Length: 450
Image (cartoon, rainbow, N blue to C red; front, side, top):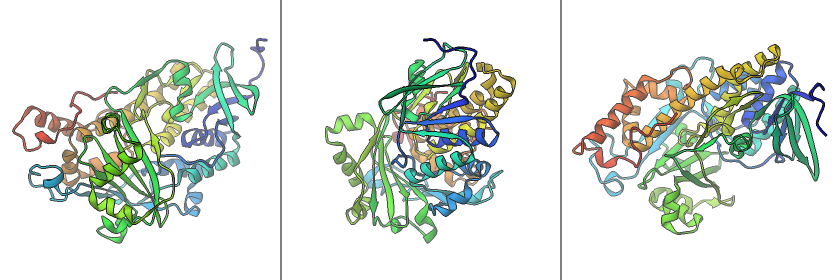
Protein backbone atom coordinates (compact mmCIF):
# COMPACT_ATOMS: atom_id res chain seq x y z
CA UNK A 1 0.00 0.00 0.00
CA UNK A 2 1.42 3.39 -0.97
CA UNK A 3 2.33 5.60 1.96
CA UNK A 4 0.32 8.79 2.47
CA UNK A 5 2.53 11.41 0.83
CA UNK A 6 1.21 14.13 3.13
CA UNK A 7 2.19 12.29 6.31
CA UNK A 8 4.88 13.81 8.44
CA UNK A 9 8.23 12.02 7.97
CA UNK A 10 9.76 10.11 10.86
CA UNK A 11 12.95 12.18 10.79
CA UNK A 12 14.37 15.27 9.19
CA UNK A 13 17.40 13.33 7.96
CA UNK A 14 18.15 9.61 7.64
CA UNK A 15 21.86 8.73 7.56
CA UNK A 16 22.93 5.37 6.19
CA UNK A 17 26.14 4.30 7.94
CA UNK A 18 27.64 5.03 11.35
CA UNK A 19 31.31 5.36 10.46
CA UNK A 20 33.19 8.67 10.81
CA UNK A 21 31.26 10.41 8.02
CA UNK A 22 27.81 9.35 9.20
CA UNK A 23 28.55 9.90 12.88
CA UNK A 24 30.05 13.34 12.33
CA UNK A 25 27.10 14.39 10.18
CA UNK A 26 24.68 13.16 12.84
CA UNK A 27 26.62 15.09 15.46
CA UNK A 28 26.48 18.35 13.54
CA UNK A 29 22.76 17.97 12.82
CA UNK A 30 21.83 16.89 16.34
CA UNK A 31 23.72 19.83 17.85
CA UNK A 32 21.72 22.14 15.59
CA UNK A 33 18.42 20.62 16.73
CA UNK A 34 17.58 18.61 13.62
CA UNK A 35 16.04 15.16 14.11
CA UNK A 36 18.24 12.52 12.53
CA UNK A 37 18.73 8.79 12.63
CA UNK A 38 21.84 6.72 11.90
CA UNK A 39 21.26 3.27 10.38
CA UNK A 40 24.38 1.13 10.81
CA UNK A 41 24.56 -2.38 9.38
CA UNK A 42 27.15 -3.69 11.86
CA UNK A 43 27.36 -3.91 15.63
CA UNK A 44 30.15 -1.73 16.98
CA UNK A 45 32.97 -2.13 17.78
CA UNK A 46 34.25 -3.73 14.60
CA UNK A 47 37.77 -3.60 13.12
CA UNK A 48 38.28 -1.28 10.18
CA UNK A 49 41.12 -0.09 7.99
CA UNK A 50 42.15 3.58 8.08
CA UNK A 51 43.90 4.00 11.40
CA UNK A 52 45.89 7.21 10.94
CA UNK A 53 44.38 10.70 10.82
CA UNK A 54 45.54 14.05 9.48
CA UNK A 55 45.35 17.33 11.44
CA UNK A 56 42.33 18.80 9.63
CA UNK A 57 40.26 16.19 11.50
CA UNK A 58 40.80 18.19 14.69
CA UNK A 59 38.45 20.94 13.50
CA UNK A 60 35.58 18.46 13.42
CA UNK A 61 36.45 17.04 16.83
CA UNK A 62 36.42 20.56 18.25
CA UNK A 63 33.09 21.38 16.60
CA UNK A 64 31.51 18.25 18.08
CA UNK A 65 33.12 18.56 21.52
CA UNK A 66 34.88 15.24 21.00
CA UNK A 67 38.52 16.11 21.73
CA UNK A 68 38.26 15.24 25.42
CA UNK A 69 37.19 11.69 24.56
CA UNK A 70 40.08 11.41 22.07
CA UNK A 71 42.53 12.26 24.82
CA UNK A 72 40.85 10.02 27.41
CA UNK A 73 41.09 7.11 24.96
CA UNK A 74 44.88 7.62 24.92
CA UNK A 75 45.16 7.26 21.16
CA UNK A 76 48.81 7.75 20.14
CA UNK A 77 49.64 11.30 19.16
CA UNK A 78 50.85 11.69 15.58
CA UNK A 79 53.28 14.57 15.21
CA UNK A 80 54.39 13.95 11.65
CA UNK A 81 55.27 11.52 8.89
CA UNK A 82 58.36 9.81 7.46
CA UNK A 83 58.97 8.30 4.03
CA UNK A 84 61.80 5.82 3.54
CA UNK A 85 63.39 3.81 0.75
CA UNK A 86 66.00 1.07 0.98
CA UNK A 87 69.56 1.26 -0.34
CA UNK A 88 69.19 2.91 -3.74
CA UNK A 89 71.91 0.96 -5.52
CA UNK A 90 70.41 -2.40 -4.69
CA UNK A 91 66.72 -1.62 -4.85
CA UNK A 92 66.43 1.25 -7.30
CA UNK A 93 69.63 1.28 -9.35
CA UNK A 94 69.82 4.94 -10.24
CA UNK A 95 71.58 8.21 -9.58
CA UNK A 96 69.68 10.16 -6.94
CA UNK A 97 71.13 13.39 -8.34
CA UNK A 98 72.08 14.94 -5.02
CA UNK A 99 69.29 13.55 -2.82
CA UNK A 100 70.07 11.84 0.48
CA UNK A 101 71.41 8.31 -0.02
CA UNK A 102 68.67 6.81 2.13
CA UNK A 103 65.94 8.70 0.26
CA UNK A 104 64.41 9.50 3.62
CA UNK A 105 62.13 12.45 4.16
CA UNK A 106 60.28 13.49 7.27
CA UNK A 107 58.00 16.34 8.18
CA UNK A 108 56.48 17.72 11.39
CA UNK A 109 52.97 19.12 11.44
CA UNK A 110 54.05 21.97 13.73
CA UNK A 111 56.21 23.44 10.97
CA UNK A 112 53.13 25.16 9.53
CA UNK A 113 50.55 27.00 11.60
CA UNK A 114 47.16 25.61 10.68
CA UNK A 115 44.10 27.87 11.07
CA UNK A 116 41.59 26.47 13.54
CA UNK A 117 44.00 23.84 14.88
CA UNK A 118 45.29 24.43 18.42
CA UNK A 119 47.70 21.49 18.76
CA UNK A 120 50.75 20.24 16.90
CA UNK A 121 49.56 16.66 16.50
CA UNK A 122 46.72 14.51 15.32
CA UNK A 123 46.05 10.86 16.22
CA UNK A 124 46.55 7.26 15.26
CA UNK A 125 43.45 5.27 16.20
CA UNK A 126 42.16 1.78 16.70
CA UNK A 127 39.21 2.24 14.35
CA UNK A 128 37.05 -0.22 16.25
CA UNK A 129 37.39 1.84 19.40
CA UNK A 130 37.39 5.24 17.68
CA UNK A 131 34.27 4.63 15.59
CA UNK A 132 32.39 3.31 18.61
CA UNK A 133 33.30 6.30 20.76
CA UNK A 134 32.26 8.77 18.06
CA UNK A 135 28.96 7.00 17.42
CA UNK A 136 28.20 6.92 21.15
CA UNK A 137 29.09 10.60 21.40
CA UNK A 138 26.68 11.72 18.68
CA UNK A 139 23.95 9.59 20.25
CA UNK A 140 24.46 11.58 23.43
CA UNK A 141 24.15 14.75 21.36
CA UNK A 142 20.66 13.66 20.36
CA UNK A 143 20.96 11.52 17.23
CA UNK A 144 18.96 8.30 17.09
CA UNK A 145 21.19 5.30 16.37
CA UNK A 146 20.10 1.87 15.11
CA UNK A 147 22.84 -0.75 14.85
CA UNK A 148 22.64 -4.14 13.18
CA UNK A 149 20.21 -2.93 10.52
CA UNK A 150 20.95 -3.51 6.86
CA UNK A 151 19.50 -0.94 4.48
CA UNK A 152 18.43 -2.54 1.20
CA UNK A 153 17.32 0.48 -0.82
CA UNK A 154 15.78 3.94 -0.72
CA UNK A 155 12.50 4.70 -2.46
CA UNK A 156 12.43 8.25 -3.79
CA UNK A 157 9.01 8.00 -5.46
CA UNK A 158 7.14 9.42 -2.48
CA UNK A 159 7.23 12.99 -1.25
CA UNK A 160 9.49 11.86 1.54
CA UNK A 161 12.18 9.25 0.76
CA UNK A 162 11.52 5.83 2.30
CA UNK A 163 14.54 3.95 3.65
CA UNK A 164 13.97 0.19 3.65
CA UNK A 165 15.97 -2.05 5.96
CA UNK A 166 15.93 -5.29 7.88
CA UNK A 167 16.00 -5.48 11.65
CA UNK A 168 16.66 -9.13 12.26
CA UNK A 169 14.28 -10.91 9.88
CA UNK A 170 11.71 -8.12 9.97
CA UNK A 171 11.35 -5.79 6.99
CA UNK A 172 10.99 -2.19 8.09
CA UNK A 173 11.16 1.31 6.71
CA UNK A 174 11.34 4.90 7.88
CA UNK A 175 10.76 8.19 6.11
CA UNK A 176 12.81 11.37 6.17
CA UNK A 177 12.91 14.71 4.42
CA UNK A 178 16.24 13.68 2.90
CA UNK A 179 18.73 10.81 2.97
CA UNK A 180 22.49 10.96 3.44
CA UNK A 181 24.51 7.98 2.26
CA UNK A 182 27.50 7.42 4.52
CA UNK A 183 27.65 3.68 3.88
CA UNK A 184 31.37 3.66 3.11
CA UNK A 185 32.69 1.52 0.31
CA UNK A 186 29.34 -0.31 0.16
CA UNK A 187 28.23 2.89 -1.66
CA UNK A 188 24.56 1.99 -1.29
CA UNK A 189 23.05 4.90 -3.23
CA UNK A 190 25.97 5.06 -5.62
CA UNK A 191 25.17 1.52 -6.67
CA UNK A 192 21.38 1.85 -6.50
CA UNK A 193 21.33 5.02 -8.61
CA UNK A 194 24.17 3.81 -10.87
CA UNK A 195 26.39 6.79 -10.04
CA UNK A 196 29.60 4.88 -9.30
CA UNK A 197 32.59 5.05 -11.65
CA UNK A 198 35.65 2.90 -11.02
CA UNK A 199 38.91 4.77 -11.23
CA UNK A 200 40.62 4.06 -14.57
CA UNK A 201 44.12 4.65 -13.16
CA UNK A 202 44.31 3.47 -9.56
CA UNK A 203 43.37 -0.11 -8.79
CA UNK A 204 45.21 -0.39 -5.52
CA UNK A 205 44.86 -3.31 -3.19
CA UNK A 206 45.93 -3.63 0.44
CA UNK A 207 46.64 -6.52 2.78
CA UNK A 208 47.24 -5.64 6.41
CA UNK A 209 47.41 -6.90 9.99
CA UNK A 210 48.60 -5.95 13.49
CA UNK A 211 51.87 -6.92 15.16
CA UNK A 212 52.75 -6.91 18.84
CA UNK A 213 56.36 -6.04 19.65
CA UNK A 214 57.48 -4.60 16.30
CA UNK A 215 60.45 -2.36 17.10
CA UNK A 216 59.47 1.09 15.88
CA UNK A 217 62.91 2.42 16.83
CA UNK A 218 64.23 0.78 13.67
CA UNK A 219 63.70 3.87 11.51
CA UNK A 220 63.32 6.48 14.26
CA UNK A 221 66.08 9.07 14.41
CA UNK A 222 64.74 10.25 17.76
CA UNK A 223 62.21 9.16 20.36
CA UNK A 224 59.69 11.56 18.82
CA UNK A 225 59.79 9.67 15.52
CA UNK A 226 58.59 6.42 17.07
CA UNK A 227 54.95 7.51 16.87
CA UNK A 228 55.13 9.07 13.41
CA UNK A 229 53.42 7.32 10.54
CA UNK A 230 56.01 5.68 8.28
CA UNK A 231 55.54 5.05 4.58
CA UNK A 232 58.16 2.67 3.25
CA UNK A 233 58.67 2.65 -0.50
CA UNK A 234 58.94 -0.78 -2.13
CA UNK A 235 60.99 -1.65 -5.22
CA UNK A 236 57.69 -2.77 -6.79
CA UNK A 237 55.86 -0.38 -9.06
CA UNK A 238 53.29 1.80 -7.22
CA UNK A 239 53.72 -0.17 -4.00
CA UNK A 240 54.44 0.75 -0.39
CA UNK A 241 54.16 -0.34 3.24
CA UNK A 242 52.37 1.57 5.97
CA UNK A 243 53.56 1.50 9.58
CA UNK A 244 51.02 2.94 12.03
CA UNK A 245 51.24 2.91 15.86
CA UNK A 246 48.04 1.61 17.46
CA UNK A 247 49.26 1.43 21.08
CA UNK A 248 52.66 1.59 22.77
CA UNK A 249 53.35 -1.97 21.64
CA UNK A 250 50.97 -2.71 18.75
CA UNK A 251 51.67 -1.58 15.19
CA UNK A 252 49.53 -1.85 12.09
CA UNK A 253 51.49 -2.98 9.03
CA UNK A 254 49.94 -2.98 5.57
CA UNK A 255 51.17 -3.56 2.03
CA UNK A 256 49.52 -1.56 -0.74
CA UNK A 257 50.08 -2.43 -4.39
CA UNK A 258 48.27 -2.72 -7.70
CA UNK A 259 45.99 -5.69 -8.16
CA UNK A 260 47.99 -6.86 -11.14
CA UNK A 261 50.93 -7.55 -8.84
CA UNK A 262 48.84 -10.04 -6.91
CA UNK A 263 47.68 -11.72 -10.10
CA UNK A 264 51.21 -11.92 -11.50
CA UNK A 265 52.57 -13.39 -8.28
CA UNK A 266 50.04 -16.27 -8.32
CA UNK A 267 50.56 -16.69 -4.58
CA UNK A 268 48.26 -16.62 -1.64
CA UNK A 269 47.78 -13.07 -0.42
CA UNK A 270 49.63 -13.74 2.81
CA UNK A 271 52.61 -14.94 0.83
CA UNK A 272 52.51 -11.80 -1.27
CA UNK A 273 52.55 -9.73 1.93
CA UNK A 274 55.68 -11.47 3.16
CA UNK A 275 57.36 -11.36 -0.25
CA UNK A 276 56.72 -7.63 -0.41
CA UNK A 277 58.05 -7.14 3.11
CA UNK A 278 61.16 -9.18 2.25
CA UNK A 279 62.02 -6.54 -0.37
CA UNK A 280 62.78 -4.32 2.64
CA UNK A 281 65.02 -6.69 4.68
CA UNK A 282 65.23 -4.48 7.76
CA UNK A 283 61.45 -4.41 8.09
CA UNK A 284 61.23 -8.16 7.48
CA UNK A 285 63.80 -8.84 10.19
CA UNK A 286 61.94 -6.66 12.69
CA UNK A 287 58.60 -8.32 11.91
CA UNK A 288 60.18 -11.75 12.33
CA UNK A 289 60.80 -10.84 15.97
CA UNK A 290 57.23 -9.60 16.50
CA UNK A 291 53.97 -11.49 16.98
CA UNK A 292 51.11 -11.17 14.53
CA UNK A 293 47.97 -10.74 16.64
CA UNK A 294 45.27 -10.37 14.00
CA UNK A 295 44.38 -12.32 10.88
CA UNK A 296 45.38 -10.79 7.57
CA UNK A 297 42.67 -8.66 6.01
CA UNK A 298 42.55 -7.38 2.46
CA UNK A 299 40.89 -4.38 0.87
CA UNK A 300 40.30 -3.91 -2.85
CA UNK A 301 38.80 -1.55 -5.42
CA UNK A 302 40.23 1.35 -3.50
CA UNK A 303 39.66 4.25 -5.86
CA UNK A 304 36.36 5.30 -7.40
CA UNK A 305 34.23 8.39 -7.93
CA UNK A 306 30.56 9.27 -8.43
CA UNK A 307 29.02 11.08 -11.37
CA UNK A 308 27.23 13.23 -8.78
CA UNK A 309 27.54 13.60 -5.01
CA UNK A 310 24.12 15.11 -4.45
CA UNK A 311 20.64 15.00 -5.94
CA UNK A 312 17.07 15.85 -5.05
CA UNK A 313 16.68 14.79 -1.41
CA UNK A 314 19.97 12.90 -1.17
CA UNK A 315 23.66 13.39 -0.57
CA UNK A 316 26.71 11.10 -0.56
CA UNK A 317 29.49 11.70 1.97
CA UNK A 318 32.77 10.05 2.95
CA UNK A 319 33.74 6.85 1.20
CA UNK A 320 30.18 6.51 -0.09
CA UNK A 321 30.91 9.44 -2.41
CA UNK A 322 34.61 9.18 -3.22
CA UNK A 323 37.64 7.16 -2.28
CA UNK A 324 41.18 8.02 -3.25
CA UNK A 325 44.24 5.86 -2.62
CA UNK A 326 45.18 6.03 1.11
CA UNK A 327 48.88 6.93 0.71
CA UNK A 328 48.49 10.12 2.78
CA UNK A 329 45.95 8.78 5.32
CA UNK A 330 43.15 10.91 3.89
CA UNK A 331 40.14 8.60 4.23
CA UNK A 332 38.89 9.51 7.71
CA UNK A 333 39.81 13.16 7.24
CA UNK A 334 37.79 13.42 4.02
CA UNK A 335 34.89 11.65 5.72
CA UNK A 336 34.89 14.04 8.68
CA UNK A 337 35.31 17.11 6.50
CA UNK A 338 32.44 15.98 4.29
CA UNK A 339 30.23 16.35 7.36
CA UNK A 340 31.82 19.70 8.25
CA UNK A 341 31.10 21.15 4.82
CA UNK A 342 27.83 19.38 4.07
CA UNK A 343 25.89 19.98 7.27
CA UNK A 344 25.51 23.71 6.56
CA UNK A 345 23.81 22.93 3.25
CA UNK A 346 21.57 20.38 4.96
CA UNK A 347 20.53 22.79 7.71
CA UNK A 348 19.80 25.49 5.13
CA UNK A 349 17.70 23.02 3.13
CA UNK A 350 15.73 22.10 6.25
CA UNK A 351 15.12 25.75 7.04
CA UNK A 352 13.95 26.57 3.49
CA UNK A 353 12.26 23.21 2.93
CA UNK A 354 14.15 23.02 -0.35
CA UNK A 355 15.89 19.70 -0.91
CA UNK A 356 16.70 20.10 -4.58
CA UNK A 357 20.18 19.21 -5.79
CA UNK A 358 20.97 22.91 -6.21
CA UNK A 359 20.60 23.35 -2.44
CA UNK A 360 23.68 21.17 -1.89
CA UNK A 361 25.94 22.75 -4.51
CA UNK A 362 28.32 24.35 -2.03
CA UNK A 363 29.12 20.97 -0.52
CA UNK A 364 29.50 19.22 -3.85
CA UNK A 365 31.76 21.91 -5.30
CA UNK A 366 33.93 22.03 -2.18
CA UNK A 367 34.37 18.27 -2.01
CA UNK A 368 35.13 17.91 -5.69
CA UNK A 369 37.77 20.62 -5.42
CA UNK A 370 39.40 19.01 -2.41
CA UNK A 371 39.35 15.42 -3.65
CA UNK A 372 40.70 16.53 -7.04
CA UNK A 373 43.64 18.11 -5.24
CA UNK A 374 44.22 14.88 -3.31
CA UNK A 375 43.99 12.91 -6.52
CA UNK A 376 46.47 15.14 -8.33
CA UNK A 377 48.85 14.96 -5.38
CA UNK A 378 48.70 11.17 -5.27
CA UNK A 379 49.06 10.89 -9.03
CA UNK A 380 52.28 12.90 -8.95
CA UNK A 381 53.49 10.82 -6.02
CA UNK A 382 52.99 7.50 -7.77
CA UNK A 383 54.34 8.75 -11.08
CA UNK A 384 57.63 9.83 -9.53
CA UNK A 385 58.28 9.05 -5.85
CA UNK A 386 61.63 10.81 -5.84
CA UNK A 387 59.97 14.05 -6.93
CA UNK A 388 57.83 14.01 -3.81
CA UNK A 389 60.96 13.52 -1.69
CA UNK A 390 62.61 16.38 -3.55
CA UNK A 391 59.73 18.75 -2.79
CA UNK A 392 59.61 17.71 0.88
CA UNK A 393 63.30 18.58 1.26
CA UNK A 394 63.09 21.80 -0.79
CA UNK A 395 62.58 24.69 1.69
CA UNK A 396 60.77 26.79 -0.93
CA UNK A 397 58.07 24.13 -1.35
CA UNK A 398 58.09 22.31 1.98
CA UNK A 399 55.30 24.26 3.72
CA UNK A 400 53.09 24.16 0.63
CA UNK A 401 53.39 20.37 0.58
CA UNK A 402 52.82 20.27 4.33
CA UNK A 403 49.57 22.19 3.88
CA UNK A 404 48.32 19.35 1.69
CA UNK A 405 49.54 16.73 4.15
CA UNK A 406 47.69 18.51 6.95
CA UNK A 407 44.47 18.04 5.00
CA UNK A 408 43.94 21.66 3.93
CA UNK A 409 43.10 20.93 0.30
CA UNK A 410 39.68 22.50 -0.13
CA UNK A 411 40.31 26.23 -0.48
CA UNK A 412 42.24 26.37 -3.78
CA UNK A 413 41.13 25.01 -7.14
CA UNK A 414 44.71 24.16 -8.09
CA UNK A 415 47.44 24.76 -5.49
CA UNK A 416 50.58 26.22 -7.14
CA UNK A 417 52.82 23.55 -5.62
CA UNK A 418 50.81 20.85 -7.42
CA UNK A 419 51.13 22.68 -10.71
CA UNK A 420 54.88 22.91 -10.19
CA UNK A 421 55.16 19.21 -9.37
CA UNK A 422 53.13 18.30 -12.42
CA UNK A 423 55.31 20.43 -14.71
CA UNK A 424 58.42 18.74 -13.36
CA UNK A 425 56.92 15.30 -13.97
CA UNK A 426 56.20 16.31 -17.56
CA UNK A 427 59.78 17.48 -17.99
CA UNK A 428 61.12 14.15 -16.72
CA UNK A 429 58.73 12.25 -18.98
CA UNK A 430 59.82 14.16 -22.07
CA UNK A 431 63.56 13.82 -21.42
CA UNK A 432 64.82 10.25 -21.60
CA UNK A 433 68.28 11.41 -20.48
CA UNK A 434 66.97 12.91 -17.26
CA UNK A 435 68.46 11.01 -14.28
CA UNK A 436 64.95 10.43 -12.93
CA UNK A 437 63.41 9.23 -16.19
CA UNK A 438 63.86 5.54 -15.44
CA UNK A 439 62.15 6.04 -12.06
CA UNK A 440 58.82 6.97 -13.65
CA UNK A 441 55.93 4.83 -12.48
CA UNK A 442 53.14 3.44 -14.64
CA UNK A 443 51.02 6.58 -14.48
CA UNK A 444 51.30 9.48 -16.89
CA UNK A 445 51.17 13.18 -16.15
CA UNK A 446 47.89 13.51 -18.07
CA UNK A 447 46.23 10.74 -16.06
CA UNK A 448 44.76 13.17 -13.51
CA UNK A 449 41.04 12.81 -12.95
CA UNK A 450 38.55 15.08 -11.20
